[in-house]
Image (cartoon, rainbow, N blue to C red):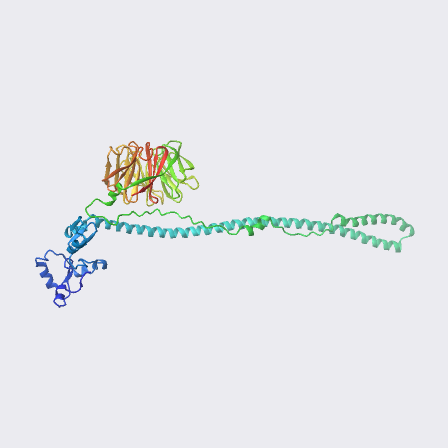
Length: 564
């Protein structure tokens, strides 16, 4: 641990308390004005670097607490042991590191440390970590908004479903109510008509009664005799009518009730829930580009060394059901997609994880394919069309066609932009927010070029020049790989989490992996080494599962686990 930086160490040793004005890291103590002057001219300390004490105290606590001398032996560090990755004093070397061969003088080890690869790598890693955190935070904030929108959409759908049911039930209710009204109205008419007849019959009977009294009182015997026969006939007719009333059903009592349809009756029993909220979880599309925590300065980077340790293990051989495959990708659920670049019978084939054919979509021409999000993939058309199609793999249909105004070959997803090779129009970009097309670089690209994106770089192939080129997002070339003895007619290209570049060589019949700096390469798969490569034309590295999908131009593809 550092000494008390607030007082002069030399004066304190003489039992004098003076405030320090500078700090000497090599002496591990503060110095007052007088001692600072002696310190700067003394032969043993004139080469020591000092910093103002107010600047020194602004260093992080972790730095201030770092021991700059051996705690065990209370001596200065003089040696750095690479084997144990630790500084040592002379006694440490004798006691614990006497057999270690890979040791350096501590001064050589710390020389130019602030400009070393390790220091710069940490700075770069921290910067990427901060950017990653920012992207993660932004992603989660957008996710919260998306959840809110989804909640509102679901609530709207619930209300719409409820309203639809209400409307349907209202129609059913109106129908049964109308039927009830017609039925009751018909019965009412029948009863009223019957009452009219009864009323008429009642009037006739009462007329008979009245006439009968009048005849009894005032008619002569002859008149009475003559009219009696007629009255008997009329009374018999009326009597027969009255006797027929009950038999005719005119006096039936109609009891009306409602019998609910059995489907509606069972609705309360069978329907337990209104619906189900489905939580369809999908993996994040924000991979964190990992960097090794330790990297010795002034030596070959670990990522470059790692291409020698990469191992492919065959997982599965797949029938692509496709001819002239130019692009492939993997979906989050494990399904694989292959293009067929023929016109006008081009198509996409989707294969299930177990190798069975899922479905096929005709697209006229299909060159490269990229998974975007939520069951949506993008498909380029090569030279046969100025359009890029977005296809919904869930509903198995073309969801949208984007006009780009040029040929479109290889394609890669970068954040929310789709990057594609536009041949003579150069490298182009489509914003997936509004489908607007813009230019990244006007440099003419070869036909049939493929592209991959990693960090702030774009890497693309040129099958005519047999090259792989890495550029910045502004088009500035960082490196070009060209070695016709190892790679001929490079087609499809992909990048793993470490930035290693995988390229398939159609004419060299192999797969080559290139280090992130473009300086080292290795043929990782060729000819009959593990599988039968025959004019391989497409590959895709899945960043989530660390699997490499490689496809021949016809019918066969191979899925590998990649380990190191």
